[in-house]
Length: 150
Image (tube, rainbow, N blue to C red; front, side, top):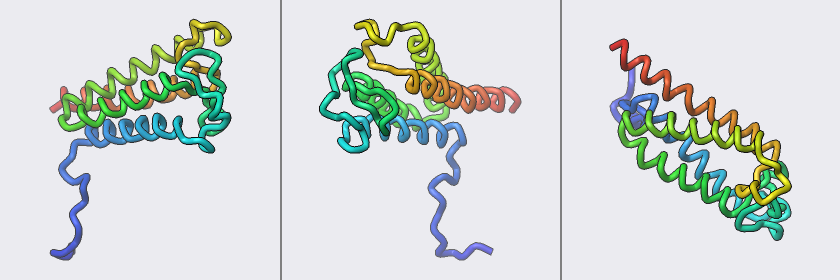
């Protein structure tokens, strides 16, 4: 039996799709911020605004640039704002997932040594974008299927 003074779970009453959207939004904000932290981002002195010349690596693995970090931050802020409603959360997960799948295709297609690599992506980024895209689309699509069955 629950005690009357027990703390309420903040997730109580929140739709799972809203929790998923909030979680991804926080993850994207964290990635964007950490891309600006020396030590967590190796070769920080080589961070450039954009392009393949940015030699900075988040966790020593993922190539980042100022523009790349700002994209993560912008999507994270949008996600927090949209996660306030079920429809907004679902739109964020579907739209954000689609954006990351496009970034995955961009990473596969772009010659990483040329100025066409404006976001400064490397192979690790490309596969992370695939993972994020699929992971965001799944709850967005599942939320829509559950809603249609009800």
